Length: 198
Image (cartoon, rainbow, N blue to C red):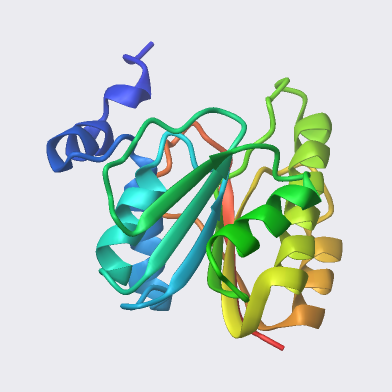
């Protein structure tokens, strides 16, 4: 059996580039394909630990932008002036109110989600848990995403994707599924990219 894939070229590439995880290259590939991130944007990142999405976002949005990350785990200080992090549950609606108030925000330009459930190895259970997270991301987007904004959602297989895509298409002009090369070959995850909120 080959050595655990965490030690592949993207693991080494992330380490060399100063990213905390290979997932930065997943977001980079999505951004390069769909042109999501620009200077001055306000971005909400759900499931942000250990912070590699935030590291990449920080570079793209520049000094005038703001990225806010939420995770159940404490995110070790990134020492980035345009990034703030919150330790909390993405299902806690009071947390979003706090974030908006503390940062003088109205709505976000982009929401990224690398949320994943604790997997069991049972496809329909993992897929169902992933679907619940996806619906929460959509719920947050309905409230906190600007018109014309975008969302990136990580999903696991094991549920009827057609129903989720149907819901997303009611709220976004374009809905695409994409699997960046930086995903481990053994992983079944992929991303849904939603563009131009209605």
